[in-house]
Image (cartoon, rainbow, N blue to C red; front, side, top):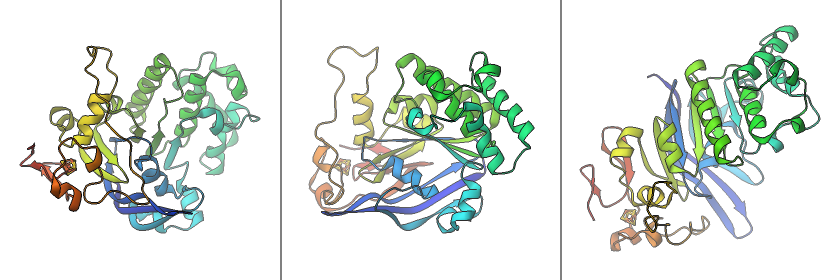
Length: 326
Ligand code: SF4
């Protein structure tokens, strides 16, 4: 598959009263046309900031310190605000975690779907209305022809998230970023939304960056997985290789700690400890204070992020020849 996006050595830092938080610290990845990349990690791993940085949506005192993000030959980090506005919502769109805070509560749903289409001058007003109705049908809103002119409060949480997906697809984007899109939903609705995202991907041939803390969701949904820990990439692999051979102790910790309805009592093992402060991250491997296999070298030397088998990258001293050697 041809490459749609390539991010090189991205660094996004936040200035805080007690120092500089290195939220994203030298992250590189790519997304091909039609590919779904899942970015996985605990809170504070840098997964969301590593993607929001692409559209320069970093809030507060955050700043992009270094790196490039080449999207169809253009570096998103070097575009003017106007050039970036032309891409945002049209070529790249975002589905956020909480649709209630992302939707405008006083604007009819149909108008919110039409807004990016009209802003980017993709269709006439009449065509945009028809597209809004069609998209509500596509995302599975019952009685979509009348409901298209309802307000957000008239929809359930799951329906609102479907509306967010309709808005994200309005301009037929090349890349959809879905930031924990199912976290605020109950389990049944969560499965429906994931199925919907999967169907949309097939129908519209859209690339997706799917941000989640749930490694099993990523394993079911993605083509490629990128596991982040403390602002850095711990592991990156095509999903079949990751499922067959997860190598980084943090990846394996996430897998063992994830709720599995078939798991026997006592088999779930939470990762001990908490993610570190990113103002003063641990020396050497940032995961060493929580890693059951940590050795002296892990405390002193940062492990190199390198390819250990075709397309499979890991940052761990103990991974050699495509195997973990404890
Ligand atoms: Fe654990 Fe050492 Fe590998 Fe880090 S480098 S994950 S501390 S074994």
